[in-house]
Structures are given as structure tokens and as C-alpha cells.
Amino acid sequence: MLPLKEKDRPIVKKLLEAGCCARCVLRFCCLGVQSAYRQSYEDTAKELCAFIGDSENNNSQDAAMLEQHTEDPPSKKMKMDAAETDVRSEGDSAVVPTVMEEGDAKPADSDVCVVCLGVLQEFCDEAYAIKISDVVKAKNYQFDTMVLSVSLPAQLSVREHSCWLHVKKEVREKSICLDKDDVIQVKEAFKWTMQGLVSKELGGVPVVTKISRQTEQFEVGVGFTHPETDSDCHFLAGICSDCFRPTKNKQNVFTRMAVVKALEKVSDEKFLKKFPCPPTRPARKCIAQDVQCLHVSVFVAGRYNKFSRTLPQTPWVIDGERRMESSVEELIAAPLLSSFRAEGFNFSSSGREDVDVRTLGNGRPFALELLNPHRARFNKAEVRQLQETINQSSDKIRVRDLQIVSRDAMGHMKEGEEDKTKSYTALIWTQKAIDKDDITFLEETKELKLAQKTPLRVLHRRPLAVRERVIHTMSTCFLDTHHFHLKLRTQAGTYIKEFVHGDFGRTKPNLCDLLKTETDILELDVESVDVDWPPSIPE
Image (cartoon, rainbow, N blue to C red; front, top):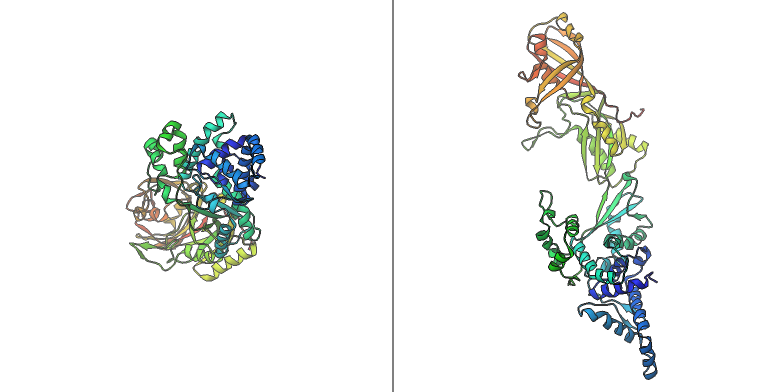
């Protein structure tokens, strides 16, 4: 039995008269008992008929007894027809579930609900649950728990508001303590009805509203459209134009949030002048969109070494033409995409090296966001094997400390990035012949402050600015009269090449100024990136 109370009778009658479906009636009665929505639509409609019938029978008990003495006992159908006539008294357009045969209640199949537009009538059954589960099974995701989400047409909010105004007067006249915020949302009623059915079709996998462990969140989304009533929202733009301002990212300004915001601003009087109350009955039900599956991103972090001077960090494309056959990110990402069965990735790192620069030492921290992975769980041994697979795929790079991390942990890689230090070794050429004593003074130079104007070579992708950077220490190793090795420990973000050759005076001071001769850089290696992340993993 539906746990409806006497106070609900006038609301039930009013809503059925307006053309609401059985489940929407329960919503407007603020019935928060989930099991009530899970029972079959036919049973719910039948109980509502009985609920109204009991009321009418009690009100006309004397007339019924008199009729019983003068004629044959009336059939249940006759009683329900009488109830239907009374409920229709305020409008002939409404349709109430009627009893077709003795004890057999069934609503008319063609009667589309004026509020949910058929969502809670036609798409809350085993057949639709099977459709959802078939899509999930076909996608072959790995998951323990599933979140079921639903996207509804924005006009449902308009129709719900109209229906609320329709029963509002009745509620106040009967002194019923009821507020619009107490009405159960269509989304909630849909989920209450469908979660158990979908779970059953998936072999008992829990189908929930929210998962606390974000790394394992798998979401299945169902959506509905109703082109016939899309224009229901349009009148709001004339009343609350500030709620519907177009933006570059919005294809349709009539979003659900915008409509809800507008409804909060518009007065009842203005609304009723522009929109029918109760809403008109649509000719067709909602159209179900394709079922969408999405697993939350998985983040994989580690450190990489780059041993090649012809390998860019990311794909090198100039004027639409690819210049190098591969890149660091592609060599790392390929095995991970395959193993996680992800649909794409985003690569980030703690800084970047030029294509002709090697990264040695303990490597450069990096992280990969794997988009919509179909497999998300790997144990430590499997992650180690993934690392070996990457390392065996190419002799140009090597990865260490590979591990799965959280989205929040990614922030450690960028935290205080410019306050970190980096160490380099550069092979320097000098135009003027030098000896060992000419360069030893560099080792005594500490905390050298530079003013670096954006280098010409990166000006196409970085804004013009003067950046202050610091070279903490330098050491030298004399090679011959025109070459020496220069080791530097610098503030992160320092342009080493520009410090060496001066970049046409855009970096001040520079090595040319210090040595009083033209200098250039022939080779550069990154020796260390001093970021304590990700955590080291013993070999």
C-alpha cells in the first residue's frame, strides 16, 4: 500500500485531473519512501484509483446504500467512473487512471505526463534497465560500483513550477504544511526506481548516487530530450534576460540551471500570464538519448630520463607539419593507454627541456591523466611491469618511480615551481682563447641575479615580459682553449642558453659579459630537477 495520508487526497485528485502520471503524483505528495516508486507503474496507478475511490465512497455512503436496495449491486467499474466524473469537474482535458475490468487498474498508454513528459512512465521499467546494462556490458569497463546519472530537458522545471502553482491554492486552503522544496525531484524518483533494476541486470553490482572513492568512480549517464516542448522555456528570456546571456561555450542558453534561476526570480503573477497552469499535455513522450559511460580519470606519475638530443618532450608540429617521429610523452603514454584502455591522455611535467637537451640524473617529474579508462585498478607488480614495458620500448627514454596517484597529489608537482632549483651541465664555446685561470672566478660567483626578457625563440608561445631569475652557484671544468664545461644550479625557470649567449642582450648579465668574449652553448644536460615528488620507489 502507498503510505498516502488523508491530507494528500485533494492533491492527488488535483494532479490526476491536471494530467500528471502516477509517479509524479507521489512526488508532489512529497512521498520520500523509495519503495513506492519501485513498484510497477500499473500497481501505483491502481492504488491511486483506489485511494480516490475510497474517499468518494465515504462521502456518498448513504447514497450508495440506497442504491444498493433499489438496484443490483454496482460494479467497481461504476464506482470508479463516478469518481472519475467528480475528479474531472474542474476540467475536461484531464485523464485519470480508470479501472478497465473488475479489479484491473491500468492507465491509458497514450497519456503522456504533463510534468515529467513520460520519463517516469515509459523509462522506469525492466526493459529500459536491460538497455542500460547491455550498453555497460558491451563497453567492458572494470568497476565495483556504478553511479547512475540522468540529464533531463530544462523545460521540466517550467512544467513542474506550473503544476506546483496549480496545487498551491489547494494546499493553502487545506492548511497543509507543504513547500515546493519538499517535492521529490524527477531525477531522484528516476534513480530510486531504476537503481535496483539496473543493479539486478548487472549481476548485483551496487548502483548508487555517489562514490566517496573518487579514483574508482564509474558513471553511467542517461539523457532525455523533448523537442515538442523545447519552446516552453523561451518566455522566461523576456522576463529574466540576465539569466540567459549567451557565452562561447553554451550552444543553448536555456540550460537547467539558467531556467531554475529565472523561475526563482519570476513572480507567480507574471508566470501565470505567460504559461498555462496546469501545463498542456504533450502528444509524444521524451526521446531517450544514447547511454553514456564514463570512468573518472586515472593519474599516473613518475620521473623520466631523456637520452636523445633529437627527441622533443611533446609532439613537434610546425605550420601543421610534424618534424619528429616521436616524443617523450608519446613513448610513455602508448603502453599506458593500451593497458588502461583509456580514450586519451593529458601530459604534464615539472618544466620542459628543449629537443636537443638531455635529462639525466634522477629524471624529470611527470604525470599523465588517462581519460575514461576502461580498466583502472593495477597492483604494484603490474605497475612495475608497465614501467618495464615503457623502458623496453625505446632506448631514448627511461622511466622510474611509476605509480598511480590521486588528482590532488598532482598539485605537488607544480607547488612552488619557481622556488625550486635545477642543476645543469653545459658545454661552452668561447670566441677568444682562454686558459683555466680565465674561468675560475665563475666558481666564486654566488646568487647571481639575472633579468631575462622573454627569449626570441619562445616569444611565439610566451608573453613578452622581463623575468628575474637567480643562478645560485657555478663550477667549471676546463677542456681546451675554446671549450669548457659549466655546471650551474639555478632557480627553476632560468633560460640557460640565453644566459650563455646573451640573446642579443635580452638577458643581463650574461656569460659574454662576464668573460668579455662571445660565448655560445654547444650542448646542455639537465642533471637534476629538485622536486620531491612523486615519492621514490626502490628498484
